[in-house]
Length: 206
Ligand SMILES: N[C@@H](CCC(=O)N[C@@H](CS)C(=O)NCC(=O)O)C(=O)O
Image 1 (cartoon, protein in one colour):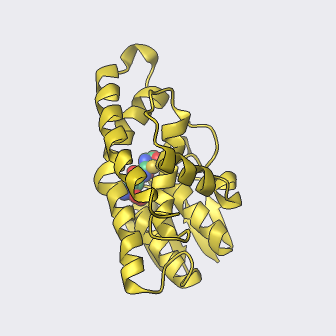
Image 2 (cartoon, rainbow, N blue to C red):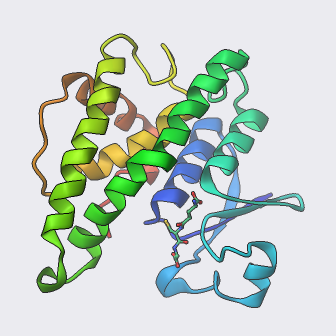
Image 3 (cartoon, rainbow, N blue to C red):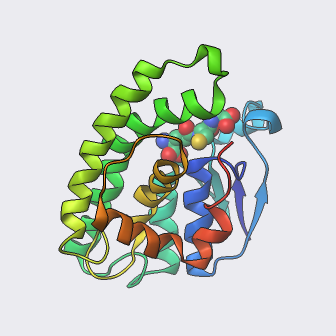
């Protein structure tokens, strides 16, 4: 059976759990990371030298990096749905996943860490405001795209929606100023209503 290492409040673990739930993949999950440890053991680092979560072992195939895992599971269990079978549509989904890594998370991470994991007196609110403004500008790009498409990679839900949606949960949950982004909001309402998102990604931020 597929084994997944990672604590459930990790944004990167949540992507993988959401993907599994969408594709109906059974798995065994091991709590790892932060207070659970495990990821700093020699055994873990022997499989994953980054010492980060998530990591999977699928019948002896070990993989880390959340987007590589989501793509692997989507190709294996959700070809034609989670992973578009048309190469251009699959690349479109890939593009939005990459955009999370190159842009969205770099801007959300300081906001999240300051507002959720840093005591009030130590927060860098100038950094929060700077990143919030830049993130709003980036999400406006998604908003313009979503004015013409139901989902990020076209007219169907795909793996391409997963990373931006977990950012969306933080964007809409954190106490920050948010400009109106009606198409992004409409899309987020739709993807976040999916039972698999509700089960794995909609919890409080910790
Ligand atoms: N690019 C990696 C990032 C992995 C990552 O930063 N994981 C964090 C949790 S979201 C982690 O392992 N932090 C250390 C810990 O939880 O102990 C991925 O997408 O999987």
